[in-house]
Length: 88
Picture: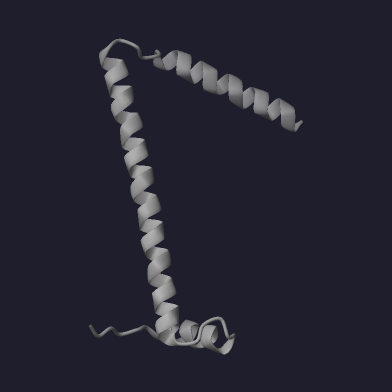
């Protein structure tokens, strides 16, 4: 595979090499790709977790276990007021 780097990317790689952080441009690219892969895995895990919570909430609503919106708003407003009072 052949890739083309932007001037900014090339500059960044040269800076990393000059700082002695990496031994070669390949090491810089390898590290960047490993970080990207890790970030993607974290995102995928987060999406899966959120989807599970959404599915659970939908099931609860289907069973009539929901909280009226007015109650939720009142609870949030009370928390905000309490947080502001702590800051004062």
